[in-house]
Length: 557
Image (cartoon, rainbow, N blue to C red):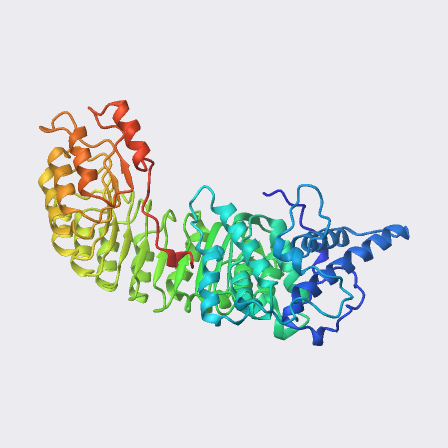
C-alpha cells in the first residue's frame, strides 16, 4: 500500500477527544495553557524528542517496549527531523536554510520568532504577504503533471520555512500550510495526526482546526485494518470542508462517524466497495437512513459529491437510494461515473437538486434518454455534462439538454448513439459551449461539423472528435478560420477512404497558423501524413491523449 511502517492500532486511545501513545510522556517544559502559537512547532518537536527519550530510557532499563510505543517513537523521530533538523544532519539529508537559521538552543530565552526583525518583509501588509505565499501554495500545483508530487512537496517545505521567520509571517503562512496538507504516504499522515494531537492540548492553537482539505486517494485504506485510523482522522480534523477517501470494504458505520465528527463538509468523494458489517445483535447493518443518520444529514449540506467507480451490488444499490433521498438543493456538482446506476436514481436526484451545475454519468450503460430528459427538465443550470460511453443515450436526451440548459459550457457525448440530428441542435442552441467531446460518433455529413465550428467556433477551446470518418480538409480549414481561441484538438483516426478531400499536411499547417493558442493536437492514425511531419509536429506541440476532466469543484480545489 505504501512504503511506511505498519499502523499499530493499540497506540490509539479509545477516548473520542485525544490521540495519545499507550504511555504517558513527562510534562513539557512549557505548560500547555502558556503555549504561544508561534512556538507551537518548536514545542511539538520538544515533546516529540521527549517521547523518543522515554522509549530509549525503557530500552536502557531493560523494560519491554510495546508495538504502540515503537510506532509513536518512530513517528516522533520523523517529525523532529522534518520540522527541526539538527545543525549536523545525516548524510544525504539537506537542511532547509530558513529552518537552520531559526534553530537555536532550546534553553535560550530569545526565540527567533520572538525577536523583532529589521527586515522590511516583516512589516508588509498581510494581504500582500498572502499574495506572495499563494505562489508556494501546494494546492495550486497541477494535479496531472508528471512532477506534480515533487512540486507540491517542495512548496510545502518552502511554506514551512516561511512559517519560521517571524510572528507576522507565521500568522499568514500557517493557514496555507495546514489548510491543504500534501499526504504522499501513510507515514506522512501519521506524522500529521501526531502533530495535531500534540497541539490539541491547547484549544486556541489546535492545528487540527486549521486543516480544511484532506485528499487520501493515493493511500488506499482498507477496513477493518484502517478503521481506527479513520476514526482518529475524523476526531483530529473537525473543521474539514473537503474529504476524499479511497477505502476498500468500507462500512456504513465508519462513513456515518466521519460525517458525525466533520459537520462542515461541503465536498465529499468516496472510492471503493461497501462491505456488510454485523452489528451487536447479529443482524447485518445496511445503508438505510436510520443506520446512517449523520451521513444522511451531511448529504443534505453537500455542494459536491463524487462516488465515481463504486462497485454495484445489493448494498451499493441501497447506498444510491439513500443518497437519492437525502441530497438537498445545495448540491451543485455530482459524479456518478462508472457506478452502473439506473434511470430511477438519476431522475430522483435531479428532482431534488434543481441547482445542479455538474453531472458526470460516464460508462453507465443502462441509463437511457428518459433519465437525461428528466435531468434537463429539472436542472436548467447545468454547465458541465459528461455522458461518455453511455450507449443507451441518443439524440432525444442530448437534444433536451441543448434546448433546456442555456448555460451549457462543456459536453461529452463520445461513444454514445448521438447523430447529426442532436449535433445540429447543440450548434444552434448552446451559445456558451467551449468544450465538446464527440469521439467515434456515427455522423452522415461533414456539413454538420462545419456548421458547428462556424456557429460556436469563436468560443471553442477544446474539441475532441477522434474517429469521425466524415472529416476532411474542408473541416480543418473551417476550424483554422473560425476557432481563434482553440487550445486542444483531437482528430486522431479521422477521415476515411470515402472522403473526397483527405486531411493533408498543408491544411494542418494552416490550422496551426490560424489557431495560435493551440497547445495539443492529436493526428495519429490519419493516412497521408509522413513520419517526419508527425515528429516535427510533436516538437512544436503536445501530441498525447487528453480527456474531458471534471471541473475542479468536484475535487474541492
